[in-house]
Image 1 (cartoon, rainbow, N blue to C red):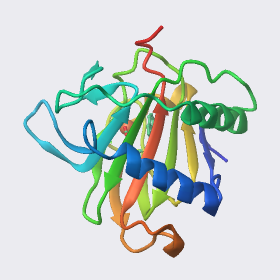
Image 2: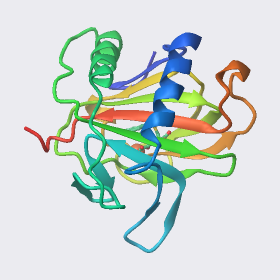
Image 3: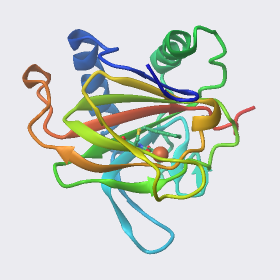
Length: 204
Ligand code: MD3
Ligand code: FE
């Protein structure tokens, strides 16, 4: 489904088995050193979603190869490169998924949220690929002008794939709330994981 120009939502893209495998992998990626952390924003705030990045460590406005604890950032796994290729092929019926070199994993507990923002740190205009696991969230998809209306609220469920390219790549977006207890029971996950795959444009 094309939600907006360049924004393609493919519900239930990952079957239950694939979701379970990805959750298991996420647990490994979240381990320290260079594991899941609280992100402090340049304005002195703290983000309620916890994060870990693979391939490149992310701070707001900045990529580096060293995590907050000083250890080297975990590599971008080859299986995520494969996942990116499948996602782009399924969303846009084309094979231009080159350059994916970073994954950002966000964890939301029942009370976590993410304010409206644009993703502008990447030097590449390649689409951002988003995979949702666990609890359903309300996702707010806005416009490219400001963080205010007009925007559309929709639910993202465990297993959903959402790809943001073209005119949607620089749209404001956020996660106003999590719907606790909505994760598929057999996934064994309390809360929500969101995995985004990105091309930083740093490596090329
Ligand atoms: C639209 N994550 O990590 S995923 C983020 O659910 C982020 O954790 C949210 O926003 C989450 O930056 C939303 C959907 C998403 C991701 C990247 C986008 C939507 C996007 C980039 C451009 C436009
Ligand atoms: Fe974002």
